[in-house]
Length: 74
Image (cartoon, rainbow, N blue to C red; front, side):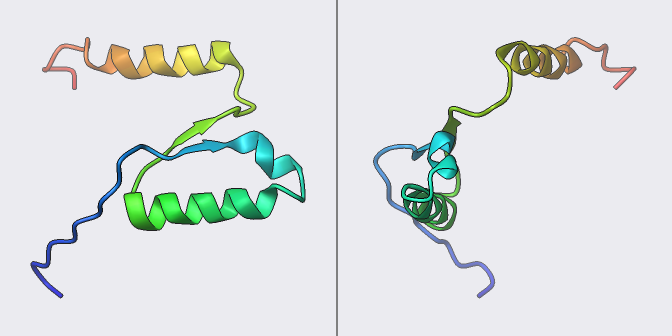
């Protein structure tokens, strides 16, 4: 339907614990939480990722540095 507005109601940002993916007992619940976050909310926060903190900080710094590049070079 062209031009339709979809209103999604939520009160908190879903926080998903990626550590639950490692346990067969908690994985189905995590997948249901993921489905809900993607289908009903549209975004989420993931905690307990295996990404090292120093790599995460490097990526953040590189992303921020883009905004410091002079407009002519962008």
